[in-house]
Image 1 (cartoon, one colour):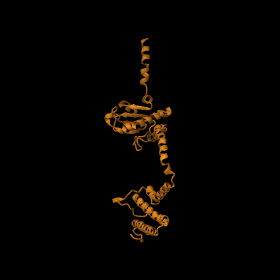
Image 2: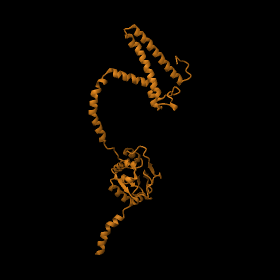
Image 3: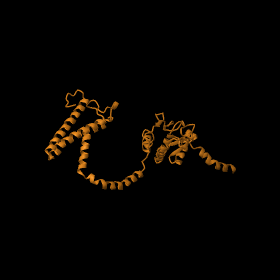
Image 4: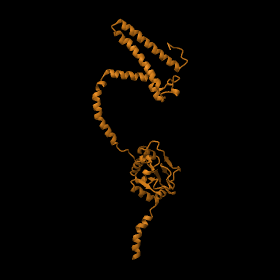
Amino acid sequence: MLWPLLALLLLPFSIAAKKSAHEQLVDLAAAGNGLIRLNEQTYDLLTSPKRDWSATVHFTALSPQRRCAPCKEFDPSFTTVAKAWAAAPKEKRDQHFFATIDFDDGYAVFQKPFTCILRPEGPNASAKKLPFKYEFQHGFEAGPLAEQLSAHTPIPIPYSAPFNWGRLGSIASLVPIVTLVYRFIKPALTNRWVWAAGTVSTSLVMTSGYMFTRIRGAPYVGQNGAWIAQGYQNQFGQEVQVIAMVYGILAASFLMLIVVTPRQMSPFRQRTQVYLWTAVNFLVFSILVSLFRIKNPGYPFKLIL
């Protein structure tokens, strides 16, 4: 009678002892809401040579003594992606595990803080043998991490970015500020001369080559401070500003001649302005031609300069 009772008491321990490595990992993942916190023993369990599962392992150092700022910044994103994987269907979820190991918990297996993918080695062995290493090229955000890791999980990670309440609050706080500012700038926004000045300025900048330099990614100045680029197909950012100023002065001198000068009641002032603005127009246009000759030394024409 004593032996059957003893066998009954030992039954739970015998059942627990029969759990495979995969079953133990499934239990650990469930207990951690999708994330397995590793130590030296569980790391050996996860990286078993005969494993038929894959795993994403995050090596980190969160202790304040380690002073690893990137580790602390990336840890919430990795935890979020691991929790998102916990929502995947069980038959797929149990084929891939998310785990993290801290330097202080697994000194013997720790090399440096990084995230890698361990591929299956058993019956479901992958053709790719080397682990995949996540290089943080897209920063520490959870979205790019989930997208990158989805290429190595049985199914894409069911991650969706949480609603950004902070951005909503920022937008809501801007509404009264914009309303208040609009009351003060409304006269300027409804003034035709303001729009005319803005239109003319935009036209001058665009016709001077602004979009040309933006599309090509041209530098602001060249080597040794040169601001004029040689050749028709090259232009620097500072060159755009100078050409826009030259075009603006030429346009202003024409406007003074055809709009302002005819309205002068004094013959002397009218004659003086004719001479003045004609000279300005001639001189500035000569500067424009000289700039053209600098860009193309073979250009044969010039005015004054």
